[in-house]
Length: 252
Image (cartoon, rainbow, N blue to C red; front, top):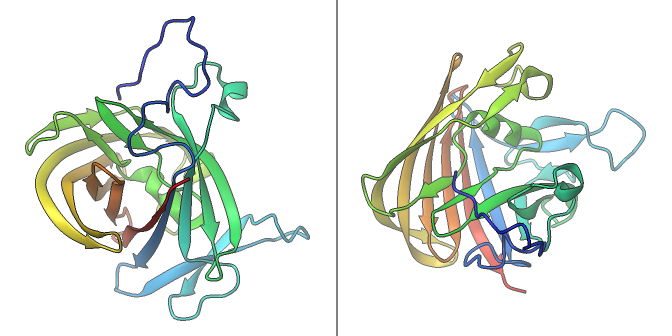
């Protein structure tokens, strides 16, 4: 992963997002998703809490696609943030653009949120996927990532991720103990035009595989130079499918 390097005299908190062309501060990206299990059943997921705090969701359950409840997550809204908070307080050397994922119900109500990071520069674009509830399984898959040159046949490898059973073991996809080190391999395999709610978009198709001692997960991602990753087509460890589609972009 290529990150921008600055002279130590450059302390502007927006130094990692100032020249972003896609993931610009205050831009919002809204995504829908489809989850299909290994035998073809389609689901959403709902957040639930096991304590008395109605805003503290600490569990999740599958919900039939045709019967969402008030706590069912149907959309993800990404908003690009200014500055480096809250990560600068944890790591003074944090080097990503900061953004939030908001998890919304059918009525557009936010049910949960998280703050994470992405990288955009002339060398590459990389983004941490959503990870609340059902989306935690994406920690085992290739992260959305494209590296220059943007040409069919370009390949690269990313092996920086290591995940712990304390946070990521789940019988719905994989139970394990200890640590898993994941190596992801990528290739730009095509340039295609895909229909989206934003119109017909030319995209680079990136085929990728994340491998570890328990198996593999796969991602075919579609990257557009104006809107970024507009479609993510996952085949997960448990042979399920998860497809995430960009449906709206809002400018500040």
